[in-house]
Amino acid sequence: MGSEHLSNQVRRLRFENGQMTQQQLADKVGVTRQTIIAIEAGKYAPSLPLAFKLARTFGVSIEQVFQYDKQET
Amino acid sequence: MSKLQKSAWFNLALITTGSLFAMLCFILAASRIEKGFNYINVILCLLMICIIIPVICIIAKKKSYEVGFDEREKMINQRATTLSLSGLIIGLYLACFIPFVALGGGNIIKVAYLPVIFICTVFTAQLIKSIAVIVQCSMEKDNG
Image (cartoon, rainbow over all chains, first blue to last red; front, side, top):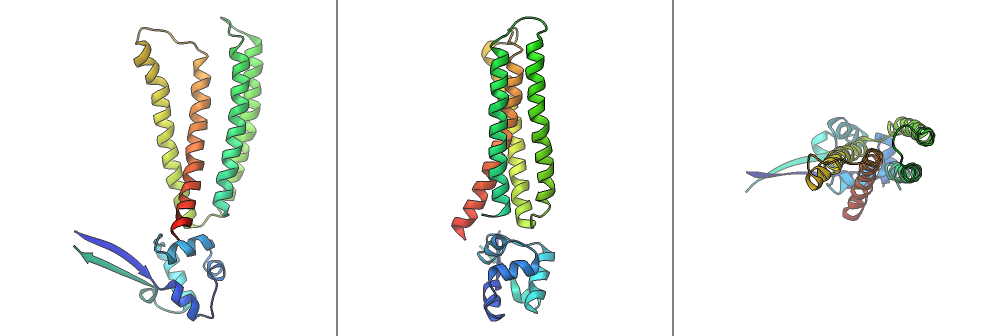
């Protein structure tokens, strides 16, 4: 059995894209700021459409935003 | 405060006020318990309907407001709805089976007990839903 973990680079990408605020990113992808906070904190795994929207907003591929790690125990 | 939290607080306030009013009407009706048909009870029941229908209309209107929720908020709302339905079933189970176990199958309970079951289960379900939404939102806030 292994544990699954979805990490992301949303916070870093936000700062690399002109110090974008959480609210600005939320408005661009059509969610609330609370959702962006939850994604950045790893508390919420977004749906595939939202993940694509986030990647397109930053102009990178989805793998550069989200990383899926399966740790074998 | 997000739209979801505002909605949960509004729901909680609305259902608490509605339930308190319904309970007041019921207490008035129950204080005049008589056997057979009673016009005062009919008037009180109609008065309760006059409250229930606007509350349903407000909740239905609020459903269109909930369309604006994003996917995370919809997930929280869905989880809270599942919890409230579970609470509704458990509430109904307790309300119906406790008297059955305590009084025995051959005993009789007053008809006045039925509106109490209705008001309490509706209130419990909505209370659980609102609290579940508020708790989930505050937990995320604490963690994030």
